[in-house]
Image 1: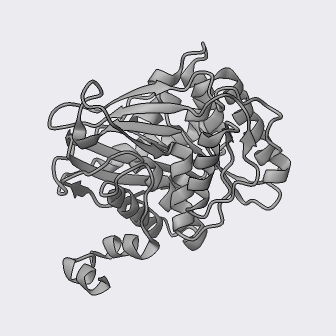
Image 2 (image 1 turned 135 degrees about the vertical axis):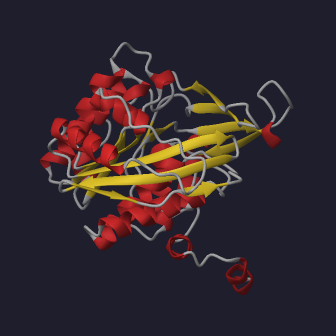
Image 3 (image 1 turned 30 degrees about the horizontal axis):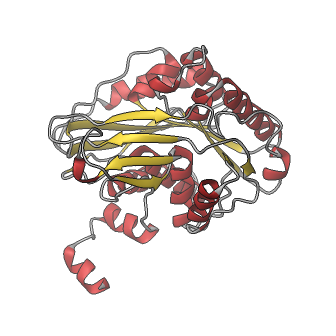
Length: 339
């Protein structure tokens, strides 16, 4: 998609210039994984015009393979993003109807060819929200990936304002999650797929006491509902003000809850893609270090925290930079030496 926003936190009704950034949840994850050195193929549908080609050029610049991108449709989907300021919340206006991805359908992507040499398939609930045909194309991909033995990663990614074609989001997303080996979401998204009220996270500082027992019980009940899943990953964020957030995460696996620290982020430069950075870093860690759950979760949190400092949708940080946050060695002196 193309993200359009005003400069300097202006409201959409102010100014005459829009900043444009290519992005979108699935692309954000793919770019993060490529930045961390992974071999990543991004599969989507874009228009066969200058905008679609420019989008592909942009993504290839980050090292993504786009050999199975489908060209067609009339336009690239867009969204208008109004940045938060002080106590004013951010807002999003979607413009995706009749876009190339809105009109994607089963049979357009050669999934068996795509998955031939793949190990992991990451998909998102957003693709199921865009349109009925996009949901059907996502289901097709998941079933083929499952048949071919790939690890399936489901990012719940519930976007209330996108569900306009008559389907019940809870039912569709729960079905998508039922095929996953790894599930990711925030508290609200787990509430959507489980039907259970979330465990609160109200940290104002990094020394907040989280009720780990409550989170463990909650995630154990989610796994009972979704028995195929081996790893339940949750990011928890409390937005104190537009520029002051707290962030932590949990991982439930083998009847065990792993928790990580709370990061106090102030100021937040750009909060878009923070969850995408979290799951991308977790996947990189998991494919690198296996079932070392604490190490993987700490790495995911650090990457997500760093994303708050990067303008745009993509988390343009390296493994070394993330590791320095994990270890607490990212000082100004280190930065001066790099320069």
